[in-house]
Image 1 (cartoon, helix red, strand yellow):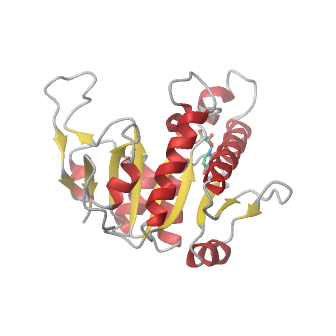
Image 2 (cartoon, protein in one colour):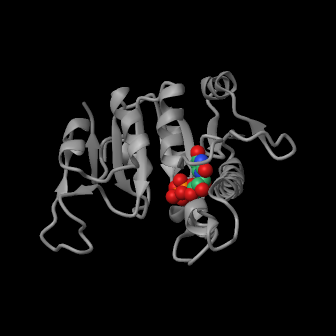
Image 3 (tube, protein in one colour):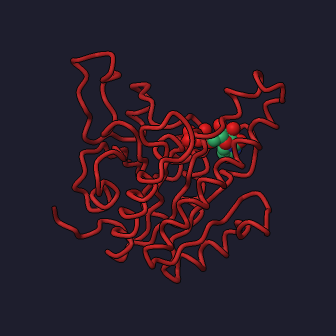
Length: 240
Ligand code: UDP
């Protein structure tokens, strides 16, 4: 694979599920370490990296609010706290590799990590530090996909790399339809016209309005973040 990066600065979205590995819940440390390896290798190519982490491996507001007797907004704040735990774990794993990294939380918790402000994030990125964006957008009723699109645009990222369980966008659900084929390249408008599920509506609308390319690839291939940055991953690219 040609290890020449196509982008100078990118935002990687790592879902909570991706950090869960084969476990049914929580963090699978070997998986966290593998993702940290991939991020460190990508960083070593000179790519400036922001990372938005999800929290679905621990808590999802919508799923649990009714069953736990809390309202949706409270459930969502619990979900945002879950993303902070994931961010701390990933940050520690990256730092152990000798790469400078900072977790920045959209919810103010100074005893735990720095608070997100755009100038602070930009300063860290400009100094070559990996920035892990925690607590999503800081608002209930949003998702970390929306946070990923938002932070990517705010910090001048040239692409959003969405790490998922599948290696791209298919014509149909490949788990249910054996004839489903992977699409190499699509425009934002084609995703809307074909009603393909890439990210939630708010996240995708932000990406489309700001012509932010979205690259969908599988996190399960070792080195897949580096490959996606260099254009060598099995993936789908959505770009205008
Ligand atoms: N969340 C939120 N606002 C945000 C981002 C996340 O309220 O801006 C909450 C929401 O409850 C969500 C949970 O945090 O279900 C975990 O985030 P998400 O489901 O996006 O994680 P992922 O699916 O990527 O693991």
